Image (cartoon, rainbow, N blue to C red):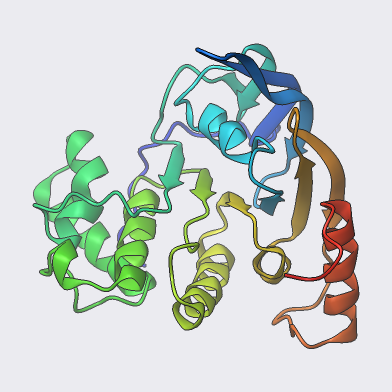
Length: 265
């Protein structure tokens, strides 16, 4: 890529991108208090691709929202690049399941949005956006509006937008869950390629075991009531990973048992 812009604060090289110690969160509702996270401790190293996996209600999205700065934890200590989280930041790019593109902006303008908010010059913004659209495989889509794009194309634009400010940490909340199987597989391959080229630290939330095993260097398995880590698995399968291999399926069955499934998905 020819044009990249430093916006996010430079991360301290001796600090892990994510460190959580005894992190907990409780939601208050009309029916009382519900513990979403219970004393979660987790350290993620720079450049790791980590998937957080678990059933609904295990707190994985709550964890991501705390790291994104959207909500504050009820207790515990959480730091990104050695700093306490005080709200959303350009050092943390976020990709949601529902794309969250601005419908009145073109694909290129959506990618440029964070740069525009940071006051970057129009020429600089345009060059970065074009480079990122090429990176995600959409070199000709810059002038299109979201309604003209397929679901998979929208998500590629969302990933490009999240990368525009050069975040050290990319947070992804089930970004491929609403896509058909072929598009999902294609975007998994593209995301692996982006990680190889750009080397952001990625925390990727999913409930799909196969997706986690295809993508991750490391897998955090969570269980609910309250959300807690039950396994931390280093995935040493060679890439590209073959879903039909014996090793892949043995690991799949191990993870399925860890989250309480009797059979594979």
